[in-house]
Image (cartoon, rainbow, N blue to C red; front, side, top):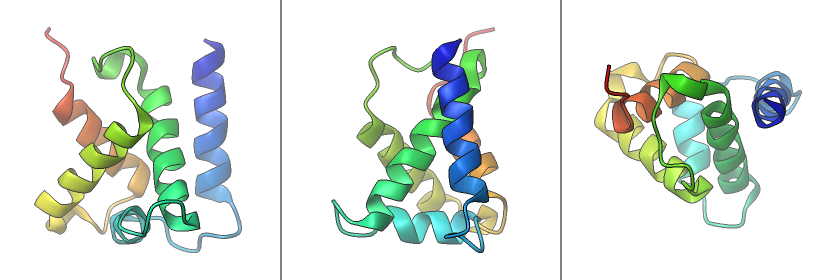
Length: 105
């Protein structure tokens, strides 16, 4: 529970922070494609990891998934679905992770 609250707080701060005017798929992909160890790359990793933490049982990712793996999944999804990039980044990250790690129902 504590981890989910932290994840939600991270997403809220990142999504609502004054640094970002637009937070759609175009912006997120641009940040994710920045050089490693830059603000953009770090923003992408933290944003995607925060969304991942809030998804809970909506996705069935391995328990030890690394944040860089989450970033890679999001980048592949955004590159494969350019028609969706006008949508909110939080929705796109969720879609990417749920597609990559669907739960068996």
